[in-house]
Length: 284
Ligand code: GLN
Image (tube, rainbow, N blue to C red; front, side):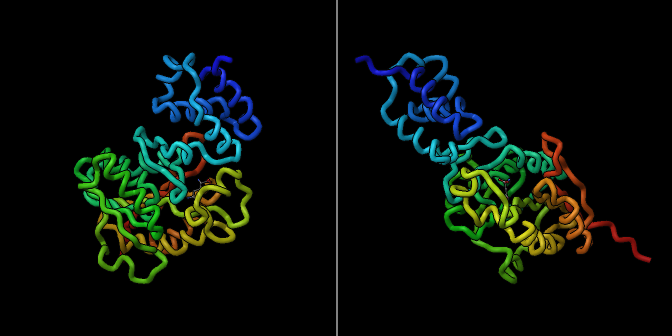
């Protein structure tokens, strides 16, 4: 019997995955491109009649068990750049591109950038890729994440301008040596409420330490935001990603520590990023 073709097994896989994924056909194509060591457009143009590779079935099984496509392929594009990802890091979301754009617009002249909870390094490295004069520091408490971030810095040719360091903003004094240094501070901290209902692909596969932050999802903001004035250089701006219902609460935390805030929305129009700057305090 003739071996099934790439096109045939993609069709079957899309059918099988449609029970568990909203993007079943796309998932099947991306997994097949990965199995063939090619990209999706080359797959669609040139390989649909080739015999299907055996390994594809295993990839489809993993996806059917809700594993995110990005962990199966080990890659996710973010801000037009290819990132290595794995289970130690949150998969960069399109929503977070709002933060990168806001950061670049706020301080196109930035020289020093800090990324708190850098994970894959996506926010920091995307900003550095756009701002060739800038240097950056990514901190994370997860050694596994730091290894991924460092690998991404190397792969993107940014390792001469990006340093990755083990640090935890919950540890007193962690930033003493960094005080007043940064024109931009970026952060996508954990902000999901502990009991939140999440898709299995998120809850069962993405790192809990990058997602959950107490009963209201605000615990990390309560610790990190008060540290921002001390980290920023004069004129510096801190950009913090938020859950779309957290704007008021996070801006109030900032106000309590003398920070002025500006809200940025994502492409779906949801509140997504708060930009903090040290407010002009007029005396007298
Ligand atoms: N945007 C992520 C999600 O809801 C959460 C990211 C985070 O907690 N920093 O899946």
